[in-house]
Every structure is written in C-alpha cells, then in structure tokens.
Amino acid sequence: MSISWETIQIGLALLLVVAAVWLWSRGLQRETGLPGGDVIYTDSGTWFRNGEPLFANNLRLVGKPDYLVEQHDGMIIPVELKSSHAPQEPRPGHLLQLAAYCLLVEENYGIRPDFGIIQYTDKAFAVDYDQDLEDELLEVLDEMRDGFLEEELDRDHNDWRKCAKCGVRSHCYQRLA
Image (cartoon, rainbow, N blue to C red):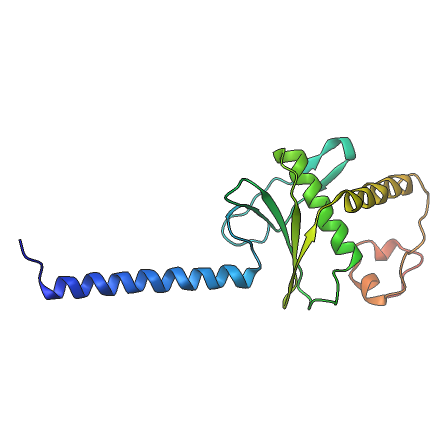
C-alpha cells in the first residue's frame, strides 16, 4: 500500500493547523493570567459557569472566585481578575479577597493553596497564602462580625467614587456621592 504525495501534504497541513491552534490557546491562557492546569471552577462567564458559591460555615464566609485552577500536582489555585491597571503592589482589599478565596478552597476542597493570583489588566501578582495573611483575614472577619451588631457604622473612606458605586448609598447618611 503506497501513500500518495497529496495524502502526505494533507496530513502535514492538518498537523500544522493543530500546532497553530495549540500555540494560540497557550497564548490565550497566558493573557488571562491563569497558571497551568485545569480550570475546575469559574465565575467569569467564560467556559462554564458555576452557580454555587464556596462556603466556610464556621466562619460565616461565602465567595465566588473568578477561577480555580487545579494544577497537575493537585494544588488548587484561586485567581481573581481585576478590571483596573495594576498598582505598584496589590491593594489591601484585593489581598484579603484573595486570602478569603484561599481559605474557601481549603474548607471546600481540603487543599491549602500555597498562593493565589490577582490578575489586573496589565500585570499579575502571585500572592503567598501564608499564616500572616490568613491571620489578617480572620481578624478582619471578626471585626466585620462585630460591626453587624452596631446600629450605624461610620464610612471607612473618603472616596466619592466608592460611594457612587455602593449598593446601599441611598440609605447612607454619610455618602459622598
């Protein structure tokens, strides 16, 4: 049985197309800031969407990370996407949000992430999930729970843009916008 020159050319063309698509998909993955591995959860509206948030009942914490990526060694990495340009360092609130997702991964999957990723439009930060960051998160959660018992809480910023985006500004007596 002999293979014609045309069959070889078609096979080579298909191989080149497959290689080009594979390289293109790798470039797209790098652009998203996702680490290597399988996306097992997403709340970004791409690929598939998970309807269920993650819970840590003992802490009364709930959240929906943008992505969870399971790496080949079994580690699960939370990835948080931000629509703004990157600051010099991640913003404190973004760090705590990512820490909350790391804690939720540990509670829901039984795997403590070593780190998480904050992806701004132009730069990504890999943030170590260490004991100091977890302790800071737990302290803030305690403060927030204590605040639930207060009749009125004072505004914690002087940024009119935050007030303009706030969902409860119509009921706030300290609003700036």
